[in-house]
Length: 241
Image (cartoon, rainbow, N blue to C red; front, side, top):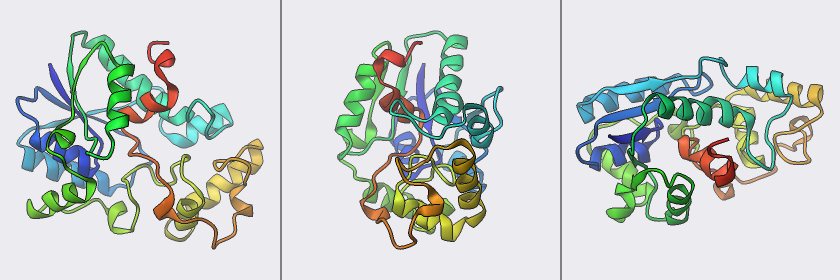
């Protein structure tokens, strides 16, 4: 089957829009995403003329539960929330749907390295990268969505580069200082958890010690937390463990 992995991000939508002969569009839902992500998903379904199938962990409700269980946020091998809410869900789907699938990904022309990493890590499958094939950047993808009349997810409108979970544990200083302003309750909850467990989201710096003027989100690059996110983070040796 030809499968398009959708992430409620603009790039993944355009990849689905450009891809041909798709059998299924799959989306792995995490409760910690902004509620507007589902409004965006349903609008994408109308434009694509195809239902987007929602996958979800049947073990954990969201990021908070995993943090409470593992007492950590991020590690050199990746974030536990990504492992359990993204990676494990994909693995379970693949077990239930064994086949030599072709996967469609929303990597743009500036992300060829990431595309190559996905091909290496998931060598059991074929892969297509419509945005790279068409030479499209992220900015051009946003332009395509705008011309189609697609309203962007709220997180983009607030100035975030990706539509990830609100309070992504992989964010840097600039990102967390913006979360402090836009979503103070999320910032405060993560800061409290950091002190409780003695670990931090930002390596070596607790959020309640983060000075409000530190960091520049425009210089902090962390990708859309799609299925591919954990592939690049956990590495090839961990894909089938």
